[in-house]
Length: 200
Image 1 (spheres, rainbow, N blue to C red):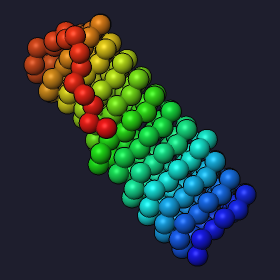
Image 2: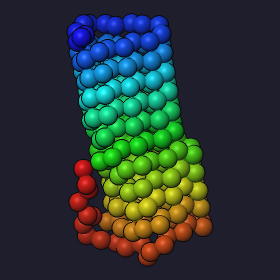
Image 3: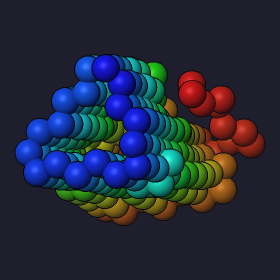
C-alpha cells in the first residue's frame, strides 16, 4: 500500500507498507517505511526507519535515530542520536551521536557533536568535529577537529586541529594548517597543490 498525501500527523507510530510520497510528515514516535519515501519536510520525535531511499526536499528533523537502507537526500538534516544510510547527500547535517555510511556522505556543511563517531568517508565544504569524536576519512575545504578527537586520513584546504587530536593516517592540506598543543600525527603533515579525489 502506497501513501500519497499532503500532511500526515501521527502521535505515536506510522507504518507504511510500500512507498510514501507526502508534503509533510509529523510523527511523535516511530516512522517505518517498507519502501522509499519522498517528502518536503519530515519531523519525527523518535526513530525513522526506511527500507528503500529517502528524499526530503527541505528539512529532516529526528530526535532519536535515522536508518535508511538506500540513499538519503535532504536539504537540512538534524538528528539527535544516530544516522545510518548507504550514502547521504545534503546541504547541512547536524548529528548528535553517530553517523554511519557504507559509501560516504557528500554535504556542504557537516557537524557532529561531542563524543560522537563517524563511520565512512565525509566529503564536505565545511566540517566541524566535536570534542572526543572518532572519524575516519575527511575530505573538506575547511575542517575543525575538536579537542581529543581523532581521524584516520585528513584531506583539507584548511585544517584546524585542536589540542590532543590524533590523525592516524595521512594529513594533506593545500592552504593552511594550524595545530594546537599535543596533536599527534602518525605521518608528517604535507602541503600539496591538489587533494586526492573524494570517493563519493
